[in-house]
Amino acid sequence: MLLQTKRLTKTFGGIVAVDSVDLIFESGIAIGIIGPNGSGKTTLFNLITGYYKPDAGAIIYKNQEITGLKPFQVARIGIGRTFQIPVPFSKMTVLENMLVPHMPSAIKNIKHRAEELLEQFYLDHLKDELAENLSGGQQKLLEIARTLTRDPDTILLDECVAGVNPTIRAEIMGHLKHLRERGKTLILIEHDMDWISEISEKVIVMDFGEVIAQGTFSEIYSNQRVREAYLGR
Amino acid sequence: MWIALAQSWNIIGGYTGYINFGHGAFFGIGAYFTGLTMKLAGIPFFASIVLAGLVNSAVAFIIGLPTLRLRGAYFAIATWAFAEAIRHLASILKITGGSYGFRLPPFLNENFFYFSMLAAALFTMVTTYCLVDRSRFGLCLRAIRDAPEAAESLGINTTKEKLEAFVLSAFFPGMIGGIYAYWLTFIHPASVLSALITDQMVVMTLVGGVGTFWGPAVGAVVVQLANKLIWITFGAEVYYLILLGLAIGAVVLFMPEGIVGLISRVRSRSSIISVSSRQKGFDDNAAAN
Image (cartoon, rainbow over all chains, first blue to last red; front, top):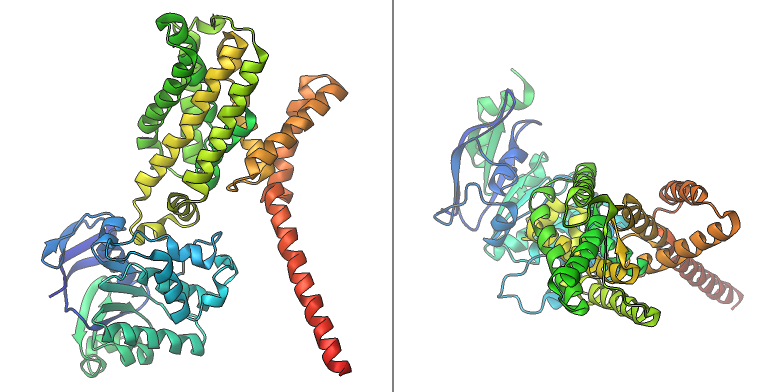
């Protein structure tokens, strides 16, 4: 077990965004999280990565409780994340974006690593361009590449192909498969079932802040509660 | 003096994106601290201005801990309130001479003050260049300005970085305030703790180019020259204040990147034009052949 949430709960006013969620994420696999809008997927990410403090429950990572850690502390223990809407450092160049992350001591030559990743993500020809001038798809690529500069063990990707053209979607898929082969744990929020089923071994379905189903895609497709959540009762 | 003050404001206001409307208070604290240590404790001038810078940094640390949790207008209002509190404190304390102020030991040597100020300005510029503009610390500050949540997700301790920027930015006005006080030989709240001091730093940085290295220097020169021109032409301070307000409005509306930003935009546009005209020439030659 790599990551575990125990009865994790978060409320906003009268709305229970995440309701007593118990989850176990195994190491080295890709796990998809799906669910209708407002089902609590992004809130779950924000709780794991320290952006929100849970009202109740605990988060365990590599057998250590990380509940209440700040986002930068969560990042430093090896959990990287991307955001639903890409957040580049807009007034900085693409290369400068890559040089910002706090680097683990194992990585000595930061600039070399940054340039290597830009090359892998086909962004090297844009390295002197301001990040704000990149297209939406390129900004998504930059965000994933930037997250990888720290070489995190676990990567949380929030709708990383939403609104992206098919070429870049395929490119992102290739990068994610490569990361999975390298033993990285990927947790992906996505609405596109076909896309997510291509990469994920396991899927978790959320609705109204609760986990309503989890398992393989074939198990999920035949689940009555999942059908109701997506298609209505 | 204004180049150094504007550059020091630029560290927190420009590079980090935290609009500080209380920066003038650090100038005033520096002036009062230098004056009092020289007058009461007999500490030499150069030691006093360095101490003034360090005291300012300590004050910035204490003020920064609660205020840097705020963002945007809330931070601006909190720092403005801090500056007002310092001004009122200087106006009521006996040791500072209240609203009448106090005298420093006189030292009538214009060249000494000119070169002291020049050295302080150079020190501010060189330190900012090395520690902020060309460093990883500077990259972190700019990342915090652009997207603080993303910076945190990359392992950046944004609270620590912001606090360091605030502490560094407060050091320089302490030193400059000390030199100014010794030159003036007589200080009171209206001369060293006026809100206009902060306003000028902000306007100079905005005019020159906020968040750029050369912006504050260019802005300070342009605004000072404009000041002198207005004083010579109209001879009344009220015109200056009206034009200061108009300048802020005009810069925010028409030139948000300031003079330095405008120059680099024109430069990059002309390089695009020259590349495309070269390309056109290449295409024409190819067609002719």
